[in-house]
Image 1 (cartoon, protein in one colour):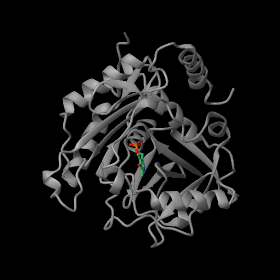
Image 2 (cartoon, helix red, strand yellow):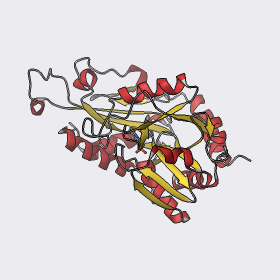
Image 3 (cartoon, helix red, strand yellow):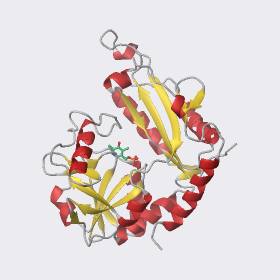
Image 4 (tube, protein in one colour):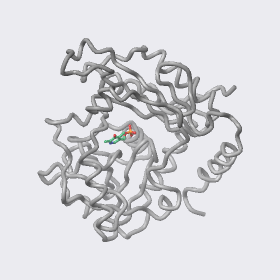
Length: 320
Ligand SMILES: *Cc1c(COP(=O)(O)O)cnc(C)c1O
């Protein structure tokens, strides 16, 4: 039995139930400042500086099997990002939290990808100071998204170390502020595809690893975990994985990680809310370790998904 079955069998059943649902929000629900609407009807105004200049921050918590996972950690990070960009949500944190839970409940979606976006708002900033611009908040709940699909998770995915582009430096765009300035990632994804792989890992241009397009990178070597300190978003998934690793007896290090280490390590994992712990078994066309999903990845994969039913990390949603 593949190591993933105990999670995916139940998940597939829930997906079939959602597919059969007649709930008008079953494919997703959005809030753009007024009534709730099906996500495919939601519209943003063209003048929003979030659209015109990517002047925004956002966060993505998830719901799994009817339980919100680490919602408060995601809202903490959102607030820190807003402070850094001097954005203020038009609705306070408690209302964001309340509405997200309400939206999941209204949609009936048991496994959800949830997005909160706070943008600068609807004025031309060449005429107005940023502080005179009322900021906007957009909320959206859709069925769970997988950065890596089920079949690929079983066998492991393929990645490249991007050569044609580096991660934008922290002195230009602070990567700890979750942002949608995806120029570097987009270019790196195109390069990965050109080189016959699925995912890119970006470097800092100085010989160290940073992260990939929406996920942190964790290496395992001799039973110890290594993950980059600088030039990365401080992921909630990574934090969770390191907490669980400690309980399983794996030591970990957050530090500068030389690119060479990715070629020398035993296992590579990509970690993100939209996909969990994702094994990478091919790097630059060569096998990672022995080319199979390794024991550390399997142990963390299981611990990570099991944590979703643990009240320490999640709380249940009352569906209507
Ligand atoms: C969201 C994101 C991650 C993963 O963060 P989580 O909190 O684990 O979902 C990693 N890198 C980037 C660039 C991201 O946008």
